[in-house]
Image 1 (cartoon, helix red, strand yellow):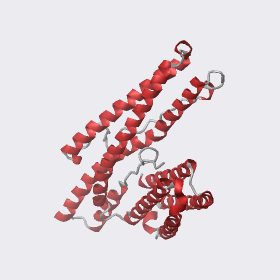
Image 2 (tube, rainbow, N blue to C red; image 1 turned 90 degrees about the vertical axis):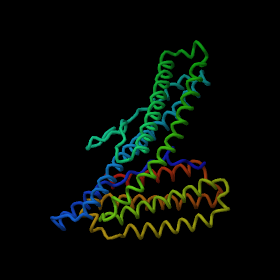
Image 3 (cartoon, helix red, strand yellow; image 1 turned 30 degrees about the vertical axis):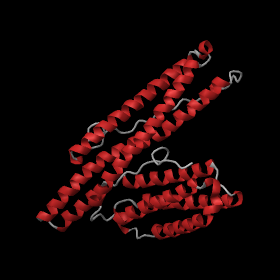
Image 4 (cartoon, helix red, strand yellow; image 1 turned 120 degrees about the horizontal axis):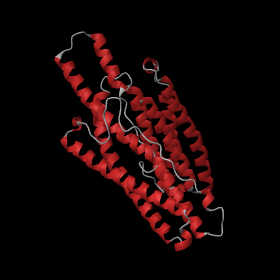
Length: 324
């Protein structure tokens, strides 16, 4: 029942405004930059370019999340309709997925198809290959789904008893699973590179405290949900651990929601930060009810875990808004 972050969950973008805040602070402090400051700025600029590129990869992953899920949901409805030809409304219930296009380049002209030199030759080649392979599979899935859609529109299933559609459905599902697998590998690499670049970017950032607080809380929430998911059918065994984890999250939410907002206000980020911790508070309310029900039933249902996962996705979206 445990979900893979890239499968359903949204991915995390990294703050770039921290660089501009840092640079502005330095300019205000001294008209003449020392050699050390110039070196720091060069490192920050390099890290910023790396983060700009990896954020595009994250945007791609996030933009495809709901679409891939909808593709799978649609194939299930199509399969059900094919197996129940007497249900004249079966095909009418099918709503074909719509893909929301993501931004393939940013304001500085960086594109996802052309990894920036600042990544280094090895990582440049890696992303070039992986993104190309991923996009090829994604286009294949769309082509196969269009073929399936045309097949249904022409009602060709009446000629071959649905044989071609079953084959297309199997192919589409197989491609989706390959996409999930490739996204996991790709995003693991993104996280490794982006985390290292983030350390440089956030070195003197006035927003560092807020970012660390949110990222730490998201990591702990993810671990908490995974604990519940891994033990959903035997909640009683981990109920004490779950309650302790919940209590720790409550303490963290109260502490970090109360951070001094002076620097956040200066960067016009106060509202975004507040939204994140309001969402965290709502997650805790939802979780409290879920744990109470689990205590009574001795287990957690798939919908219980999906509900918590959905709340977690909302937290990531709010974190990403903070970083825009």
